Amino acid sequence: MKCVRWAFALLTAGCMISQTASAAFLLLDDFDSYDNSADTRTSLATGGVWMSEFDDGVGGITSNSNVLATDKGQSLVTKGGAAWRGADRDLTGTDAAIAVGETKTYFWQVQATSTGGGFDFMMGLSPSVDNIDITNAWQDFNVMPFVNNAADTPFINADGPDAEWWAPMNPDEWYNVWVVVNNDATSPSYDLYYSAGSDAPTLVSNDAYWRNTDLLPAGQALNAMGFMAAGGEGSTLMIDNIYYAAGSDLSNPVGVPEPSTLALCSLFGMFGTATYLRSRWG
Image (cartoon, rainbow, N blue to C red):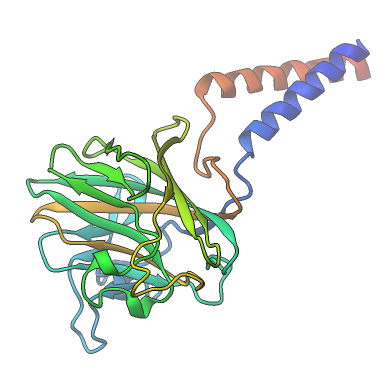
């Protein structure tokens, strides 16, 4: 009987570990805490935590960046159809910034949807929010995965030394994105992974290029995050559940164990409890 109890104890521990494997990730934002009842424009809805680009500080705020209700609660929504527009967040002085010589993993979820216009979206990290939306979003970031292509065939990618693979996305479907950033002082790079649903991450681009080093030289901390859009009228990028973790971490911070795993863990839990009670009181 003692061996049986130990077996159930080990199995129960395994279930607990499987359900807490993503504990290393820290939440940056899931956008659910913001009151957007008065105004959905990002600068106003978030109280300046995220700043709309552009926002001139005197009432000129783009309507192409919003915090809106989605099937995930509330999400950051960036709309195409204008000059470069979007939102950025200053990470200076926070654990979410990536210091020189540091490796961090960023995770977020993204959905591309369109009523007709093609996609042209940047999702990136930069040394400063002052760099973002100066000229265009292609010059704003060092770390710059992107979503491009026609309305019915979006893809996610990052420029790197490997042969380009246009990682396909289905419109109107949420995808998980992992960006593993190695902010080396002289040879920085990043790896891009993605997946759908509870699928394991798939490598999209290995050792992707550190972009725009003529304007944004290597050897700087990454203190800003931005999601920017051009693209066609009707194209929309939704962002949610932004997390970060030290080092390289390809676990899913919002992942839910498969139903079969949950059922098995519950079964082990019931048998373990029954075995314990029987040994104690029987």
